[in-house]
Image (cartoon, rainbow, N blue to C red; front, side, top):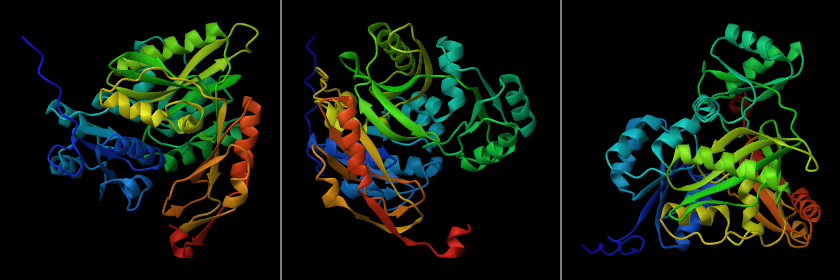
Length: 413
């Protein structure tokens, strides 16, 4: 029996189009849309607010509460996508599971989206089912359970809401005086009030990396490791490659393979790892977190690799070949932040920023700003990692973000 010929690759906005529904339309989703369009897909971008970055380059845009399962189902049945691609954590994952059982294709899988949306799910999978090395941890729902967890783990320790993004609600507890404020911040910074938190014993690590792991029809591939700096749980700089000795790199890749194999599906995964010890001696690798989608620290791949993480994601989820992932030159990224809340962000210093050798800018087009919101990223390559980092930071430091201040009554809400 002969295999049936592959389905023709259609044209956007026609009856033969291959449709990609993007759930979450931030800056990472914007780059996914661009790469999908380059390959001729029709893209529908959705988010909880209008004019989100990815909406500005998509064929269609829809505004909805993606935590509302009924609204999410209505959108899927309306646009009839070939691929449902979550880009954020705040999605009705129970509805995604139902849709997947009905035959809709969720990237990478609905289960992977559900597990990684909740830090409890992914930590229990990694530590308790797969046996990966992690920091010691406890989960707590009440302040009493939280105090007990802190007492058992000792100081310093880290508290995070089980569901949050970009470091919201996360803090380090160094002294007894930090304990109550950290609990209050975790409750206000999570996706829902009164939710559980994870308390983690602090790991004295020397290096923090993201290992971009690609699952495709060809198997599992790895990008060169990416080093990064986070402040309050949100990334500020990244660089590629992050030098590791061969034994440590193998540990990292084994860990990346195990966690992504357990999650399944196709696409790129951002596997975050802590590395304890220096390159000259033995090192220990700890699993931290995983995102089943392009990773913010991976924006550096737009300048450092032959294929960015976004192109790799689109190729993998559409069943196209990946081929060889190659580092072109050492590259770096540095974020551009808003300094205050307000509307109609505007940027100055662009001309001076682009005078920095090898530099590039990506301004995301977010319609509003808030203190420390990521509004853009500077990219640069260099002959060394150090040169690339200095250039990226020099480029980013030239950009100033101004906004129209919000009325005082809104700021008080």
